Length: 308
Image (cartoon, rainbow, N blue to C red; front, side, top):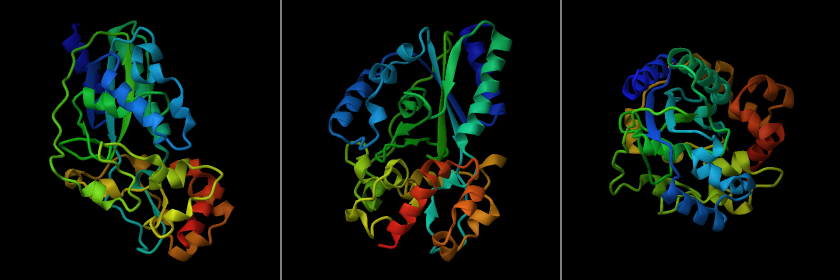
């Protein structure tokens, strides 16, 4: 089969496995993104996420990360849900964390896709990742035409918004390549205006030091700075504000992945139950959940901070 036929074969299988959108780009060094990333790191906007300083060239050039790479496949998996926590006063979780940890779910689908490619096309080598390697996932989703990077730094798809997990696959196979699309943010600044901690900068970047998602998940073994007291909008793990206000998310559809459906016991937790949560209950509720990343001690710290 030729490159176009192989590309179609791969996309069809990816859709069959539950991915919502698939795009393919020629592997190259992302020079503009490298310059922007370098300045962002120099400015200290990565906060305490020191791992982002590592493997710079591998991060901006997939051929350095996976030698022999010729094509980068970007895949989007929908996690949007219309489900809401029942108690409007209960501490809030970002909706991507309602169900099973996406790493487990999507990595298995990527494995199935990779094995299918080897079975149908032949001796193809490569690797696949979902938020687990030095890969500029959003940049590659942009390069493959799946959307544009919005003012809130999120990948926005014109058809279905931004509530997607992004996965990447790198192959030593020439394929047929998609093209980037234009930016459709226009003059809208709703995400910037809605961020209660002023984390969104005007250059489509995030100052992680001020981001609620960073403060409630990635900030480890420290207290959340007092300057954010009263500004967390009741978020205990992650934050959806800049996505919820984005006009493009009016097109988002309920995800149909069984693993991402929330437990009723979680959604029905009252404010009092959240603040009184013991470690045993935490472990039971959040088994194989993204919330395990914060650990029980981190979640309790976040909950106590909300009382300030």
